Image (cartoon, rainbow, N blue to C red; front, side):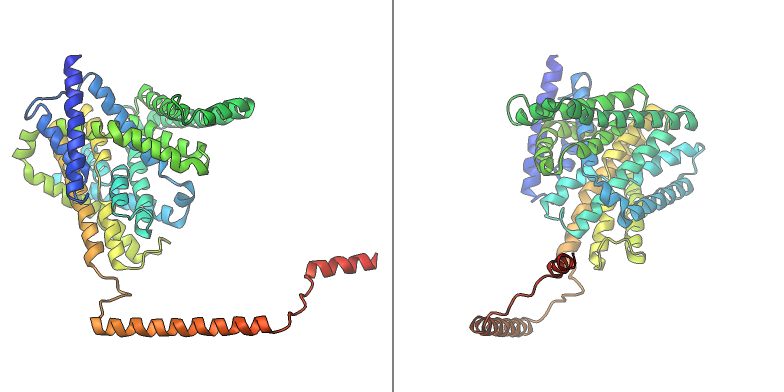
Amino acid sequence: MTTIIVSTMWITLAALASQFLAFMTKNHIPAVVFMLGFGVIIGPEVLEFAVDDGGVSMLRELGLGLLFLLAGWEIDPKTMKGRTGRWALRTWLISITVAFVVVYFIAQPENPLWAVTIAIAVSSTALGTLLPILKSVGMDSSKVGKTVFVHGAVGEMAPIFAMSLLLSARSMGLTLIILLIFMTIALITAFIPRTVKTLVPRVGSLIHESAGNTSQTVMRSVMALLTMLMAAAAVFELDVVLGAFSAGIILRSLVPEKFHKTVEARLNVMGYGFFIPVFFITSGMAINISAVAGRWWLIFLFVAVILVARGIPVFLTEVFTDTDSGLKEPRDKVELGLYAATGLPIIVAVTEVAAHRDLIDEELASILVCAGAITVLAFPLAAYLVHQYWPEMDSPKEPKEQKTKRAAAEDEHREYLESKKQQEEKARQGAPAARKPQSRTVAEEEVTIDTD
C-alpha cells in the first residue's frame, strides 16, 4: 500500500510539473509530451520512484476511460451524418489501406496481422489529445477545428472497432456477434435513464436539484455509465476503450443541449485534473528505453509512415474533393492534415492489445508509443506555425503606404454611407405616414366572412 501511495504522489507531482512546463512554452509543447517524459524518468527504467501496478493500474484504466469518454462526447451525430463525415470515413479507409500496404511492403512480415496492427495504430487521430491543444490556440471553434473534430472522431472510432474486430483472439464471425451484443447492451443502457425519468419523474428532478451540491448526482451517474460499459467490454473480452467511447456518445445524447457546457466543464475537471494525466504518465513509465535507444531510427520511420498514411490522405481529400468543410485556403488544408496525423491514445491501446496477444513485442510497442509522442509534439506545433506564418491567399501582405490609403478610402466610403442613411431617415420622418396595408391573410379572412 505504501508503494502505491508513494507512486501516486510522484505521478501527481509529475502531472503538475508537466503543466507548468507547458505553460512556460505557451502550450506549443503539449503537457502530454512532458507527462510521457516524466513517466520515463520516474518509472522503472530510470529512477524507479514509481510503479504502475496495483491501485495505480486501476487509476490508469479510469484515466484511459475518461479520455475516450471525452472523445466520444465531442462527436456530434448531425455532423457525422453530413458530407464531411462521410468523406472523413472514406479518407480513413484510404489511410488504413495505405498504411497496410506501406508497412507490409517495408517489413514483409510472416503474419499479416502484424501489418494490420501497425496499420490500425498509425491511421488513428488523437482527438482526445487534440482537444486541449486546439482550445489553447483558439482553433476549436474555427472551420479547421470543426473539421479536425470530424476527422478525429472517425480517426478514433473506426480504429477502435477495427481493433476489436481484427485483433481479437476469436474468429471474426464470433467477434462480430459479440460486438453486436455489446452494442445492444449499450443501447439498453442509453434507454434506461429515459425510461426511469418517464416512469418516475421525481428521479429527474432529484438529479437536477442535487447536481451542484455535495451529492454530485450527475457525475456519479456519468461514472456509473462509464464503468458499466467498460465492464461490459471487459467481460466480452473487448478493449475497454470501446466501452468508454460508447459511454461518451451515449452521455451526449442523454444530456439536454442547454446543460452540455456545464457537464463538459465538470468532466474536464475530473478527467484532466487527475485521471487522464495518470494514464499518460504511466504510459511513459511503460516505455522500454533500452529498446528505443537501440532502434531509435525506427521512431522517425514510423513518424513518416503516420504522416504518409494519415496526414497526406486527409490533405489530398480536401484538395481534390468537395467535403463541405468550408476550407478554401491551402494553409487550412495543410493544418488539417497535420492535426489529423497526430496520434497517441489509440497507438497506446492498440500496442497493449497486440503485445498481450504476442502480435508484436514490447520493444516495438515502445517505439510506436514514442513515435506517437513525437507526432503530438511536432505536428500540432507545425500546424500552428503554418497558421501564423503562411499568409492567406485572399489577403496578401500590402506595403504600409498602400494599406494606409486603402484604410482611409474605406473609412471615407463608410462615412458617406452613414451620412446618406441619416439623410434618408430624416426625410422619412418628415413625410406623412403611409397607410399600413392589410395583410393578405386578414383580407382573405374578411372576404370569407363577407361571402358567408
